[in-house]
Amino acid sequence: MKRSRRWAVAIPVLLAAGALAATATGRGTGGGGNGLGSQYDVSKDGKITLTLWWLGNQEVPGIEAWMKETIAKYQKLHPNVTVKTVVESTDTWTQTQKTACKGGAGPDLWYNWAGTWSLERVWAGCTVPNETVLSSADLSHVPNVSETHWAGKTWDYPLYRFVYPLVFNKALFKKAGLNPDAPPTTWTAFVAACKKLEAAGITPIALGLKDGFGGEILGSATFQKQLFTNYNSLIQLVIDGNFQSALWKSWLQRLVQIKPYFNDDVNSITFGDGLGRFQSGKAAMVFGTPGVQATIADMTKAGKQVGVMKPPVFGRTPYADSLVNTGNGFQVTTWSKHKEAAGNFMAFMHTPERLTALYAETGNFPADSHWNPAQAKRATDRTMLKWLGQKNVNYPANYYPTDLDVNGNFVVFQGILGGKMTVDQAAATYQNVITKWRKLHAAELQNYKKWAQ
Image (cartoon, rainbow, N blue to C red; front, side):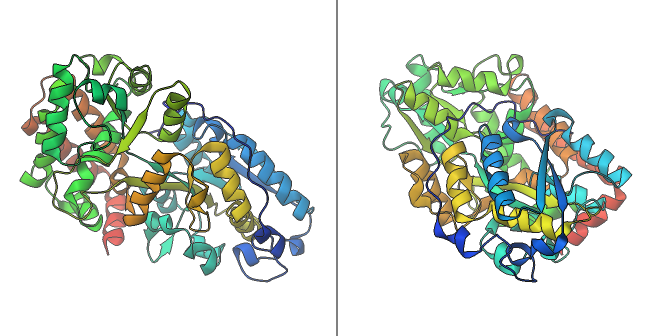
């Protein structure tokens, strides 16, 4: 299965901030040390070439220019190293990784998403743990490494974070008699706001489900996260839990409750089409996507006033009132002949100057506490960073099999919002998918059990 980012919109490239002193002092440069990551002495490796496979602008518009600058700076610092990048297709990315792993040949490092997306490659023996190529100091300031914590190690080194707020059009809120400076925070208030918008002749929520991804985003970032205090219980649910329980049905009941407030052609348009409708002012709200900062920037430039809010709360767990995020980054492959050098390059991408440039050129939040969030000038960015600082709640879909996403979330949202599927039928769909998965994936099930421990 692929995780496509086809809904991403172009992010304007801003001027990068000036270089900070940290790079000059040796952080991420090798520094003449014999340690790992930022302390590894790359010069002792002689003339080498590092190959990196990734998704480039398909995943984050503007990041290819950033990477080109990063490589130029790194190669100037380490003239014995050449870094080559290959942009792979998002549509075939997972299969490309599987093929390379099966043949034991490919890049020295590659890009990956967090959670099961990275761990499935780990379980296949494709990648090495962060701890074998990065120092403890390199890992200590990247909290999202926790998303791939398995068997006592971490397995993906996140570079940036995706966030999932609700975005709303302030003018349409005003038109419906709602206060745009105090958007709804509870589920009851959210439903009441949707009713007011509909009564004013405004489509409350724009959504496209033709390509399925809207089901993943809404299900994971808005609904499912509200059931959990920690995702260990979600992993346990995958292992032997009941997806037809009252707890799991509780979020499906909320989804059915707001069905009248979506556009009536959800199954006929893609997620990107739905986002476009919101951007053009044809709906009051949209559920945020990777690259949501770009949507806000584009609308602001077009003269529209936009706000953000956390998903409305109906759950009673600590995760209920939160903004979900996930950190995506790089892994070093098992067949690389230059694993330590690859780790050094990953650490270099995390130097403060490179993190500053990353935000300036892409608008995405760096997944590193060494990045200074004071750089964020847009009010919506500052608001989201404030929420992230209060709680670091990750993306639930990273903790269950992709089958449950594609054959569960995709199907259920299309069935409920674009069809006549009931809550009981939806819950049965999830249960049938996980029952079949458990029977067909005995080895992966054992890895989940190890993950739960």
